[in-house]
Amino acid sequence: MCRGRIIKSGVIAAFAKPFAAFAIQYMGPFDLLNHLLNFAAPALVVGALVAWIAPIVWRKVPQAHSLRAQVAMNFVAGLAVLVAGLVFFGRDGKMATYAALALACGFSQWWGMRR
Image (cartoon, rainbow, N blue to C red; front, side, top):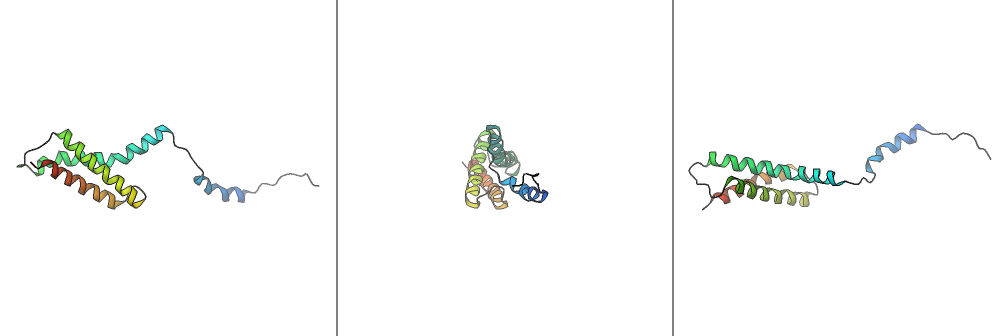
């Protein structure tokens, strides 16, 4: 029985290192909040920009709702599209989802400006 030194190979350590990214990592409450805010941010920004630009584009159409109500309607429509894109594609950040976001916010703004 030989009780010599244990030989550690750098090759095995280098092979196992890339797989460390697949280890289970738990998300804390601040990480979850950060992810949710970053998921909803495009809907808020696009909804606000559409609501602010709409009176410039459609000058002769009277505003049916306040700016805050228009932003809220656009945000809800945009968030619904982002969730639908996440469910349909299985991941966030697809360009098709962002195109649908722009269309949904434009449609929501047009719908809100009707009498």
